[in-house]
Length: 85
Image 1: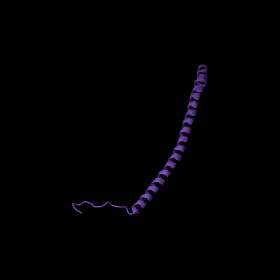
Image 2: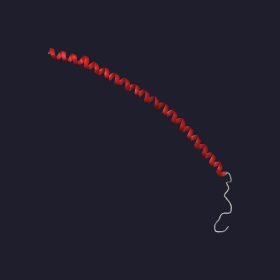
Image 3: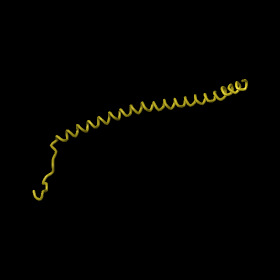
Image 4: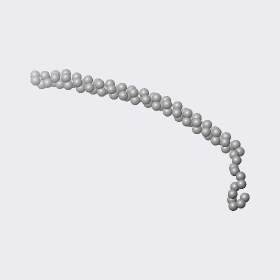
């Protein structure tokens, strides 16, 4: 060995390889579980968005109909009562 040069290369003895495989397996399992959780959560939340949109459509229709009824029926009744009194 001269001037700090390495004459050979490092070799793995197999112990580190086994640990690497175990960690890789754990990471893959975690990824699969999180993907499943994401699909379930987004599916449920997607249904919520549809329900909210339908509810807002119904509320909007109810407000429009209520406003029309108030304008046509109640305002005319109020006007007629004001004239009589």
